[in-house]
Length: 311
Image 1 (cartoon, rainbow, N blue to C red):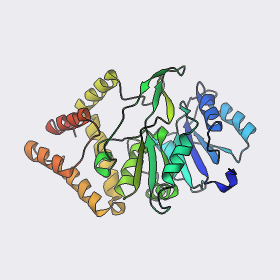
Image 2 (cartoon, helix red, strand yellow):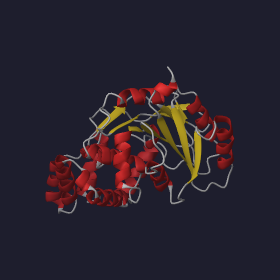
Image 3 (cartoon, rainbow, N blue to C red):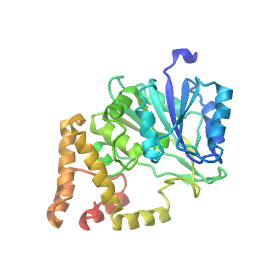
């Protein structure tokens, strides 16, 4: 099919000290079965060869196909939001990309096929599973599979899809852009899930692993499916990290609750109020709010966090 007749995708790639794996990721873009894309790369002050690699590919692809920008140097969240809210970038769909993954060839095709089932004026986002690989691209497993329906009540306490899997339509992009980049939130992808689900948008979760998610000592987040990572999350929960994350996310949502559906405003207020109550009213209030995680183990953790006021 002629790419000129296809919907345009803008890939938002944020980089920082990414020279070791960046070429493999860029090559995986070129191997996509859906080729109507342009790449917008924002480098956040790399001191290694990252910028030189981007310039090398820009020479091969042309500056209309790869545009290089300087990030705000305030962390990965600010960098991704700077691209999301850049009014000079116009496309039909938008895809977040990390610097060290490898996209499966069908990634964009599957995402666009899903998103095109939604009316263009309804915010919609696609996300899903990943295939975990080591630093030399050997398979080491899959991210958890989630079966429950994505929703705002889930988004308040869990992000079902990593940003490296996310593709969203123009209505979703305009929603995020209207809110702006000056929000103090934990991650751009969790924020996107909360905002789009909260405002009545459509969320597609794909059980098919759309990319090879490289696990190495330098990546910012890594997989959360190993027992070691679960232990780390339990420790963070006990130290109050999860509660702090919720404080920040809820404050940002309250500042923009005029964009939420009436039903989701009720969920937000119910959850926010219940967190501040004493033990038994807190337990009842959290349950009444309807928030949930995707797995039994996750909901057990949610219950424990509620009991010990770590939510």
